[in-house]
Image 1 (cartoon, rainbow over the protein chains, first blue to last red):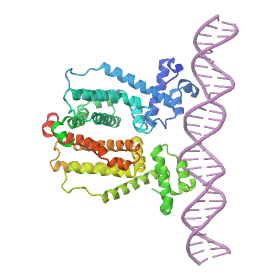
Image 2 (image 1 turned 90 degrees about the vertical axis):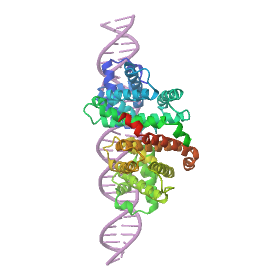
Image 3 (image 1 turned 60 degrees about the vertical axis):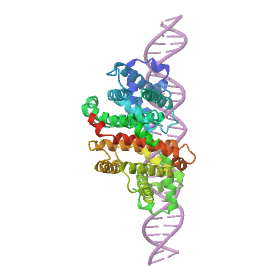
Image 4 (image 1 turned 180 degrees about the vertical axis):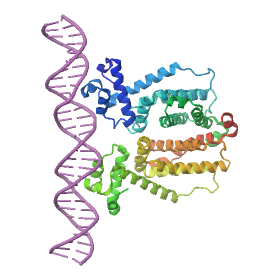
Length: 220
Length: 220
DNA sequence: CTATAATGTGACCACCAGGTCATATGACCC
DNA sequence: GGGTCATATGACCTGGTGGTCACATTATAG
């Protein structure tokens, strides 16, 4: 975590630094990020950098908390469109709101997902706890869905969680890759075409998980 | 591509080099791989390395062809268990045979998938053609499935391809991550537990794609 | 105004990267 | 033997890395 010195900094200076770091990580990942470049792009001196942070990994960890905080706030500002919504509907809403968030903070999301997926798998599982938190959320959701009778109880919970994670990540990657080519990501994400694509992906997942009794029974 | 000098080398020396390279890429990816380490681990001199290859990316490209060749041979040695098999059954067989192959060449597969997924996305799409080839294969499969009436014609082919790719990659990643923890990967992959897990994942995908007319119609 | 504490700075360090090249080795032919 | 050509070698180069530290600057307190 950043040292006290950093947190005492005027907001603008702090923002310069984290923005430079975000751009750096988004472009080069963690391993190949250069502290020298971060330093020169944020207009501070090398010495100051090491007065603020332990090292670049420390900066990255801080970005993780920034993302988590921003995302929380973003979601707090939105509300599910309808109160009586089934679990899949809620999941769909979550994914879509998540996509909106992603398009509002594309560099930050890109930086973090690049590191988490690209390098995180091979890192000594430093980010295990962050991952674990989202997994827990999904597990709760799927258990809720089973309790509601929306998903067959014989469905393996871990499997379902993995499936939902896979899709969440796949869609996120898709949006980031395709969206980066657009002039206005936000507008593109909100377009009916894009929304329809997301819907299709999610429906395929949903039907796979939902259609159960008759079909699942045959095999498990 | 490697220079002639390399191809003239005695097999053992060649193998030392590509094995060292595989281990290096599997552990460090492409960007962070060190030619110095490859050189010292394969027992050749720095100068020789550059007499064999342009640079480390050249080595990696060569590994791609190695993988492609080995995989072809491996699949040629196997045969689908039954001739009258539907497309999904064939896909399932393909995935499983692929997993067996992966567990037979874990380092090679790990090296390449690490680079392709971890860094490939952000590379200037150097590997686009390799990717394109597998995409084409899947597209043909799904079109076949539509022609056979196994999949609803209203299904978006590109979407289906993306779904199949996503699953193929997710399962592959799962096997590599979990399997690397095992003493005997091959045995673990062939175990009924693992096979069942793979089956479950694929059935969820299959039902998602298969259940159509009634369900898809509602939304598209 | 002075003394003390906090913050800022960039030259500098050791290290390792990818890549080159003059030279050495040895196989083959006349 | 001498001559030629492919192959092998590692010292060496430039340039960037993460990280340090003695010193300069600024803020705070008495």
